[in-house]
Image 1: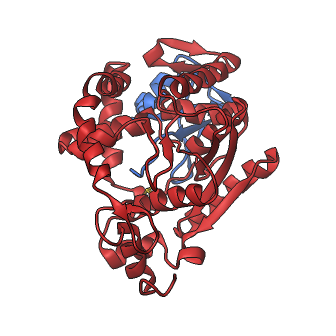
Image 2 (image 1 turned 180 degrees about the vertical axis):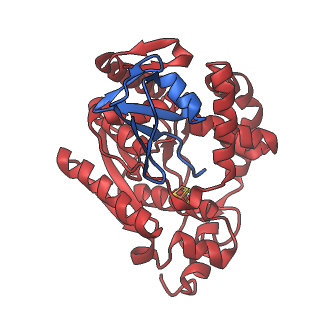
Length: 297
Length: 66
Ligand code: SF4
């Protein structure tokens, strides 16, 4: 049994699995995330959300492969790839692997210390770049990520607290494709992270429970704690905060995001869309790997 | 009761019996941020845990904003 307070309901195993599948099916349908014939690549970390997402998309009979990105975060990365491989091989699914150190010459902790960025900042930039370019270069139409309702509500809270209008305009379950960008979708947006952990337990999916050591003390975790305290007092708060924004406020910010996208040109190093001559990822890579731009071309 | 906590992995002893809700309250954990697992089963807040139970409290909150 699992109790989901915001639905004021307790589910048995079978009904809970149907509930999860239905929420994903509905998110995909309502936001037109996938078109017939699309090839999807799921960004797989070895954690609960991405493995549950892969499992749910396979269950809904989509054409979907996985992509694991090795971040070079010591033991944490060493273990996380094992969970991803084990899941894929047990089900006969195709898992691609890219390793920041082996393939691009740097790690997340290394990049963070050289550039004085936060590790999560360097990590996020690397993930967005690698997932997009990999999908573009390997003929995938869609990149699906495991961002869930809690992630999105926490990001929204952070964006609202600082009135980041560009980020608010881009915060949506679907980012459409554009020159240089593959479509990005978040099919778990209607499911909370407690639901995703429960899904994995009930489906017998072994995932990495231990948290990334870089996460400790980051702002995002603080936002989640605040939102969970609200949710405990007033079930449904997270969902109404996020879905209220998407339904009633997102459009007000969308033009800012469209204008930002229209002003982009191709990076002279990797071809990714950027506001300057060389994109932020290539600049990060140059500083973190010590390989001058142009040498790797 | 033996309680397995994660992140980092450690075990503590808590005296029972009690309900899941009161156990989480005693440990100052928000029920929204954990799953409670007994054997292979998920249990709800109103479930009673007896003194010999082996219970895993698994956090479900993950960190990075990327
Ligand atoms: S916690 Fe930060 S560094 Fe670790 S995987 Fe998540 S985004 Fe990357």
